[in-house]
Image (cartoon, rainbow, N blue to C red):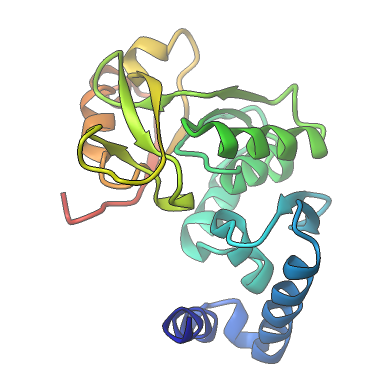
Amino acid sequence: MLSALKRTFGFIHEHPLAKRKLLYAYFNFIKWQISSRLNKGLVKVPFIGNVSFYAKKRLTGVTGNIYTGLHEFYDMGFLLHFLREGDLFYDVGANVGSYTLLAAGICKAHVVAFEPISETFEILSKNIKLNNLDKLVVTENKGVGDKIDEFFFSTDSDTTNHVLNSSDHTGYMAKVPVINLDSYHQSNYPSLIKIDVEGYEAQVLYGASQLLSAPGLKAIIIEIIGGG
């Protein structure tokens, strides 16, 4: 517990936005730790502008936004400055929708959000409805890889849920349909893609070879696990 607390305080201390108002950021952290323990369900939290999201204890896909404003400052900041109204954004590994909410709620871009874990997908869907973004966001309760298939995913690791073999995981898992982006793409090309799939990034890129060569695609935000 102490090591986790130390990591969180270190993250807040070094965050480009939070370190400008450290006392306020630490206050938000402490306030959230108390309120999330008093209320075990989902809590509505203001985000940016008129956008809000649902959060609960250990839902780390959004709680960092509570402490700092923008959890992943540079990537989220890039998205906010890059996307324009009417653009198309693919959110691969959307989790509960931080990037989706910024893209649709603030930039007024169209979004396709892919999230394979059912419980996480349910909160993603609630966040979209909370902000009345149904007309801008299409949600897909599917994984994304290099081919159309079905894979086992861990389901008990929050933001680090990932593709696995049925024999190598002792926790909760689920069999999930998987598509590739080339098979999904139809007419309009996304101008921006975000990929956060916990070590499966290469397979997502292999399954998007045609899409990656499209002139309409201008940028990719990607998290690389293990330097792959």
